[in-house]
Image (cartoon, rainbow, N blue to C red; front, side):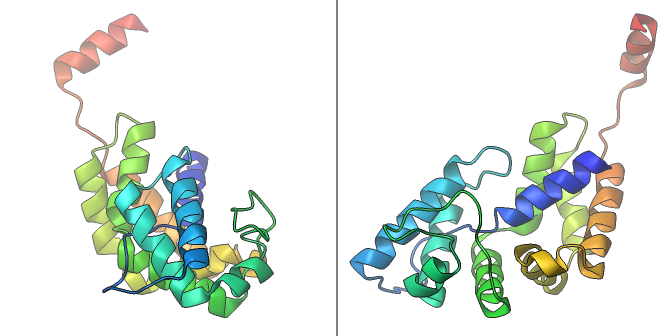
Length: 189
């Protein structure tokens, strides 16, 4: 259960994802540099790493919607536009822009399922993604992303509810182990 919650938290915190310019949205040179740095960080991170396409989409949309000044003020980036490893503080409007950019660029259920399946070979990635799709509507995921970006709401009822749903989906998506494999495994013990 703790592993499930930690993985969900990591996935949600990585919500700084991206997917290329949003409908031809033009970024200034400075905005593009910041977006590139955010995308690079998200696609290179261990754990809940995003595909490069999703990381780029998120970063470009988030930077375009939030603006470089707000990202500097939140301490997500430094004066040079490099991503800060810790200490970022989002107000609610910035957290909402973050969540909107993430949900418009990343398939949350598929990303979380992939992350879980990579860390636990007993998880059926497709079953988990389908369960998460059914149990976690975008409206709840958005609330959770906003709450996890704000230290004062990180333990909200929405986060608790989402964690419970993820844990239940994780249980439901365990791969069936063939009986002959079970017998071999039990003889080893």
